[in-house]
Length: 450
Ligand code: SF4
Image (cartoon, rainbow, N blue to C red):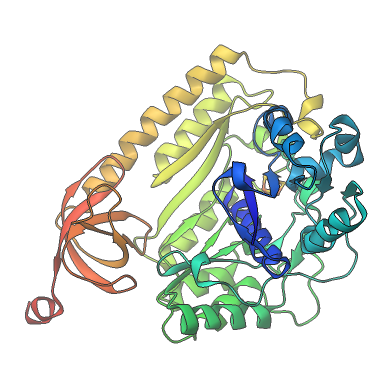
């Protein structure tokens, strides 16, 4: 078999696309390899959300020049956001590159590779496809399911245009996959591969058929959750990433009504200051964010909330930063992904001139992280003495004699006991670590007699 090596940059959505590339190339006789030296085709699946993505990708291409030169039949390709942004220009710039394909061209990868093999041409394909088609793979090889968990992409693109973000330009506008296909795929994963937990993926997954271009009668995100909840054998439904404005009464009701919708939501807030939120074009105020999160917490007591926060956005004053600190303090997130603002070429925020000095950005990030670490520690500590229901994921990576799993709130638990991957077990929590919990599994008999 020919060998394919995919290098993935960026988020879970990109990792999912990389898996799909492997699946798409299988009918052409390609199988994945981790060893690039034995590969016949290398794809760099890029992400321009990360800092200096184009320079990193060009450096990697430089390192692959020799690999490409060793065999004339080898194919070197760049896909993903950076490819979308640079297009033909990238092919012109890198003479030993064979293929550049954009974020909407994934399904055409086998055809493009075949053309390159047969006609010895170089190809750049970055068009947006107009058809309302959401290509996906109906059959997922067993190897793509990790234990009892699988990712399922339900939409792509974004219509929000936050001023610091390149995604709408390189991933295109929102496109929602038909609900029937999603339900069928999840049911198949449960039945055929023993999947017990799915994470629904999308740039703003809660916007699924909520606002933009929704076909009349198309089920909204909350309705999709109700349909998935009916699948027998599926223990938990997760999703990422949410968008605060989408937390409307129907989604709140789903959290109240559907116990298998996990008790965790990742809801980026980005800033606690209204003027900064406005400059970011986030489309909500601090008050709206806190109100909607309070609705969710009221509907699902114990809900874990995580978030993304940017510090040092252009124009952010000390008072704005203090507003963010105050928000994080009062929201008591389980954890946050925090970022010091850095420019992304092509975004509107690059035209904002009142940048925050580098030192101030670093200090604010450090201050924020110190406070959040303390909150995370307190929340984990508060679980000690509780009995938690844990979905068993398998042996711990550090100690194969210990099992690990996650609570519905997405907290990692390491524990002693005997159980199978995909089992739901009860664990008495005995200790809190900086980012996880430890405990002792109790048998079903113990639990029932207690
Ligand atoms: S919601 Fe904003 S930050 Fe998120 S992908 Fe869309 S534009 Fe980017």
